[in-house]
Amino acid sequence: TQLLEQSPQFLSIQEGENLTVYCNSSSVFSSLQWYRQEPGEGPVLLVTVVTGGEVKKLKRLTFQFGDARKDSSLHITAAQPGDTGLYLCAGGTSNTGKLIFGQGTTLQVKP
Amino acid sequence: DTGVSQNPRHKITKRGQNVTFRCDPISEHNRLYWYRQTLGQGPEFLTYFQNEAQLEKSRLLSDRFSAERPKGSFSTLEIQRTEQGDSAMYLCASSLVVLPTDEQFFGPGTRLTVL
View (cartoon, rainbow over the protein chains, first blue to last red):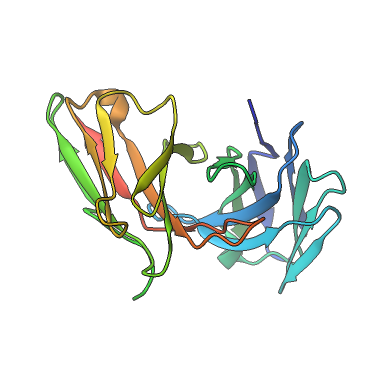
């Protein structure tokens, strides 16, 4: 059974601080997607990484895929209150359409 | 708006009733997925279609659940004889598969409450 474990589950920080969210598995994934979800809404796709060691940047967000394609991280620089939300990682394999989601990291950024 | 749409957004029903949800994917997308999300958890896969064909179903999808995508466009998810444990957010996603990635774009979800 493929599992993705995210840590931490909850994070409450002050505006301007940096943070890193981790997504780990013992399984290899062909792609890893990061989503952000607001309460009562569906997840919104932030980024997809497919190559081991790949790094992608989206403004203040930096995403990395592990060399072995089993883990990923999301780093946010100078967090802002607008970054508040649930961050989800999801792994995909090329032989099935389904995504395996982590349990999510709830981020609260206080002004 | 050209994103994934879901109707209704909220559904309250009594235990034992049947409910049906609809999902309209992004128009050129050939894959359509259903997930279920409970509070504090990530979404869990239920089933997916490629065009009209239902290619995979999770063990979570009991025989009370049925999904269809009759013409390869919109999809419906029906839950018969609802139970309180069915209360959750039901999410639909669609994608245009370009291997090795399968970027899935989600709708706003249907929140089901079973009383």
